[in-house]
Image (cartoon, rainbow, N blue to C red):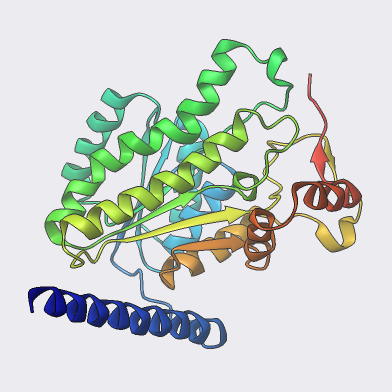
Length: 306
């Protein structure tokens, strides 16, 4: 009888699992045609790393224009203050600038404590800071390799450790990580950059699942990983695009707008623009030679810089 009971119980669990899987598939399809309502960020405290230029600057300006209190972090004090001043010139006085080297754990915690005292608890963390060197692996120095890994990946650990505790305590918050579509493509001259962006994707998946597990599904903290295509931030100098009229890059302003929309709609992952992510995800099922034939035909890449 016990074996029969256990068998029936297992069958019931399997049937319930099938129903849940079908429900979540339908829910996913539904959101494609009817996007989620954009939640308000007014009154939230948004911290953006790498706010002194490029996407980070436009993210800070974008969030400020939506009524959020914006905290700008950058290692470059001058450009970081310029971002803050531009926001204040818009008539938004809830903008703050702090110089911070996000690769330095002690400095991150020190400046984070200063933010708590002077501004309040951060409720939206945007890990945007990034860098790269467009070189062959054997031409990169140890310092260059460490710098890219520290800025693009290790800094996420320090900011998460600094700001997640208050989010967990209040069961409220959102973490946004700027990865890259190169997380799915081991591009030439990207032997350091591409792995860091893949690791950011894995980190966000793992920390999201960790909170889900330990809260028994009750955590309300959201995680959004965005994968931008080519954005004209000035980091890449020698870009190659065969069909530039079709596959050209986008401006930092456009990228920031799409990233903010992804966060406000609680997307777990989002390509920037959105159509690129499902295309690149097909790489996992397509034969390797097929993918690289198409990649070579499109002529995408960046030439080595001196």
